[in-house]
Length: 437
Image 1 (cartoon, rainbow, N blue to C red):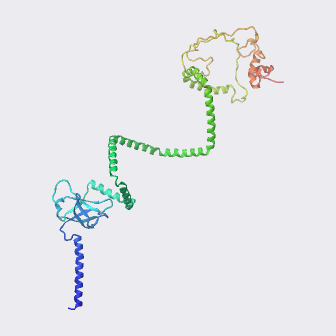
Image 2 (image 1 turned 120 degrees about the vertical axis):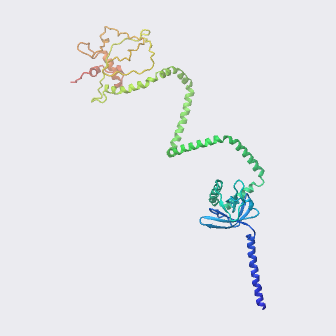
Image 3 (image 1 turned 135 degrees about the horizontal axis):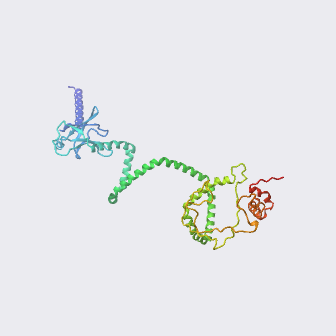
């Protein structure tokens, strides 16, 4: 054999030995020559964080690893290699969960053993996914955690956690003391939890009420905005008003300081009057209502709405004087104690005098008859003027009456009214016609 051929054969043998060495290294790394118990895990999905070679744990103890991950239809199939030394600890009815090692770490297969004892798992057995409530809740938490992690950016969160760890370094005793105090506070707060729960429920009811009232509140806020804008626009006038009020307040203070004794005396002396007014307060609405009802009658009596509004239709009867007031003789005695009441107003064809039910008030007062006089000017008839009655025209009594009626109109005193007015105006008040020729 030539040296060249011998060198080529040696080179080929070297390459084969190198390839075998690499293959053996990979096989040893993948534990191809290690005796294992193969089993299969079927789950809904494996997730992105589960890799080939991931640990298989039972109660925190590593009992195998994941050899292969493949999909069969809608199911993910994981080929697991269990350590023969630990197979006896894995029951045949075991189930599995896919859990992360850390918040951001890869997942591993966590075997969940049911309560009680059972036979060890056999080779090529099929393990199902854990369908318990706790497993479902953990899966939901992990599913919801992924969008959160994508939103908070794990690198920034890691920097934040590192900063927190640096800040808490060497302060473990203080943190522990704080946690102890927090536990004590929570212990004291625990008996009040029912009340707190009731308050929260009532808060929910109040929130519902505010939700119903929200449109009205928003409308009120809009109106308040308009009011506030108006106040801003009128701030100059308001400033002037405040200044005026300040001056008025000072003057009012001075007035009250100067007249406080008088005001106290006025209030003290007005008490009896106010008590009487308060006692008869129930009849005030009736009195005011009857006064209002009397307005149309008064308007008709004084000619309102007639063809000649300046001509009044009032009949005035002049009676003789009953004399001056005599103390002890004309003093009435107020013996009526029936209290406040409302009497109906008599309507036509009722005649005067009008008395309340039960007759006139028996208060003990007397009305002496009118005095007699021999002087014709003191006699004033109470009936309309007729042919058989004494003449009233142009009498002193008529002139005195006309002076009292015409004085305010003319702007003079009643005694300054001309005497000839009884010739012109007197017949008008008596209802006669005046003809000027």
